[in-house]
Image (cartoon, rainbow, N blue to C red; front, side):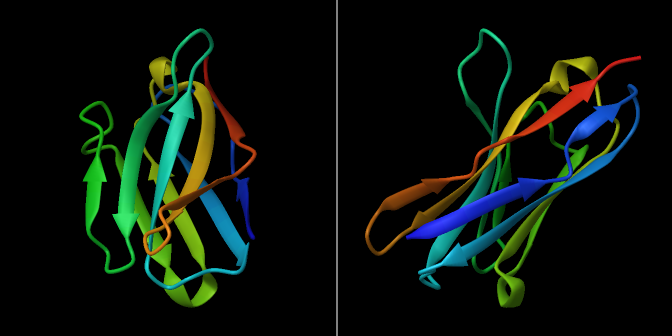
Amino acid sequence: QVQLVESGGGLVQPGGSLRLSCAASGSIVSINTMGWYRQAPGKERELVAVITRWGSTNYADSVKGRFTISRNNAKNTMYLQMNSLKPEDTAVYYCKLVILTTNTDYWGQGTQVTVSS
């Protein structure tokens, strides 16, 4: 089993910044991809950004140039630096880890991000 714990969410004004963290523990296989997803009220969960173990990244068009995903493999931790936040970024942000060898997904419990003046 793998456990994922997100942290770093909160309330921020438009134009502000937040840094989310996702700490993974348990039976972690090295070949994995991690990602951030978000779900706003009344909307479906959507991809924000993903990163492979080797550092290749992909972003949703809505966050390109504002968000940066990164990871520290030695610490089994992933980050999401969010700058120039907008009210439409308000959502619960979830961490996801995919074990590629078994195609198994694990999700964190989510952390709330609210962008409001």
